[in-house]
Image (cartoon, rainbow, N blue to C red):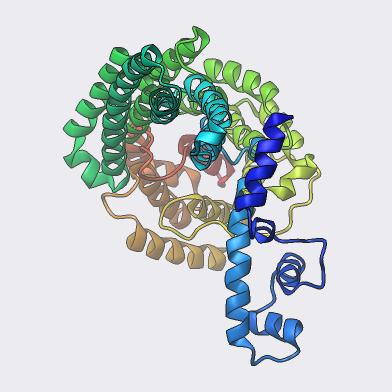
Amino acid sequence: MEELKQLVKLLEEQGKGSGAALLNLADTTNLETKVYLLIKDQANLSEDEIIQQLYGDSNRNSAFRMLKSRVKRKLYNQLNFLDIESTITYSKSLVEEIKCNALLNEALILDNHEFIQLREKLAVQALKIAKTAELSSHIVRALEILRLNASFRNFDRKRFYELSDEIQKYRQLNAVEEEARDLYLKIMVEIRVGVKNRIDHAEFIIEGVNKLFSLWKHTNSSPIYSYYYVGKSAALEAFGSVEEHIKHLNDSAQLFYNGKISALYFFYQRNQFGLTYAYLKNKQFTEGFVVAEQLKKELDSTSINWFAHMENYFMLATHSRNYTKAKEILVEVLSNSKLKSNPIVAQDRWYLYYQFYILLTEKDLGFILTYKPLAITQDKNGYNVWYLILEFIQVLKSLDEELIARNVERLRKYVAKHFDAASDPRTRLFLKLLLIAGHEYSNAKTCRRKSRYLFQKLEQTPFAGDAYAEVEIIPYEHLWELILEAMPK
């Protein structure tokens, strides 16, 4: 009860205006509330339309600017009351950091001898969260508040020096973690800027990743391991080191199982998602199926993560020619009512997967997908290429000479414009094979003979790294077999 009395006293003495710091949504006559409700219920309204509805006069821009400023300030205040634990938007470590920050800020506000016990209580709560979440800078902040109390409020010499020693320890840890973070960000920017840049800075990237590992071994800090984990994963993906990436993912999972890494800094499901994808790229289909099936059971089938995982699972099935499993996955996904809640581009990909399944098996699963993908990006590489491939193969099957000729010319211009020697080599080779098929669509024997050299090059060319396309929906070799089989003998 004493705590409540102290807080009431503080708010009565210094809380002037705090009652007006938030929007009162119950008062629908208030202009601030009206702005909020108009934007919430009619998001497409223009600013002029909102002014007209608020004031009955579209010439009140000056008044609206001041109103808008007050509403924005109150909405920013209300960010402190978001339910951050009920959403996947925030990582677990960030949730703990936000909670810790709130407690420390409250403790700072109570910087008065009269409220020393409240201040101490909040600092202790923050310290507990900070240590559990391995937030070294927040640990230092909390300890400094407690040390200040020991020095200037409680005059406790023994506690003062104990806290001073602990502060020094965590300052040193924080310095190493800051060093690791700086190095991690440098590594990531060199990887992400572009292919040529990462090649030019390959030595720095590799040495940087090794340094991060050394810093983790020295400190056992979970935040540092998270920098090492992400940095090494990005580097291995960028340089196409799939086997080493698989080992890295499995080693990390083992450290997590053994309790060496905090769950706040290691996203196990994301690790297994990456492992499924890596097994797919490395054609380790048996291992991939084991991981994929287990992860599928752990994911919520209404979540976007589940749909993303099922894409990798589907491609494991098509690449291993397990079309029975591919059918099961398609039926499961296309029957899921939450598919329409996914981004349009993700829905478009499932359209492509379904159409390629029909192309391969000539079996219609009974789903009506009549729309054409609209959201797939029109870059030179990516899923738009697969849509182009799908259309071209369908045209070839028509045996319509005029239609095929038009599409051959269209494809020829597309390849010349977008696929130079530096492009994804496998896609470039396959598109050239399609051009041969377009010219020799009426004779499989001639087409096979003229395409032999390019096809052999395709077989010898590994999958492109992350700089180019995604993993192929269907391996180009399988598609080429299909095209030749469909041609007149």
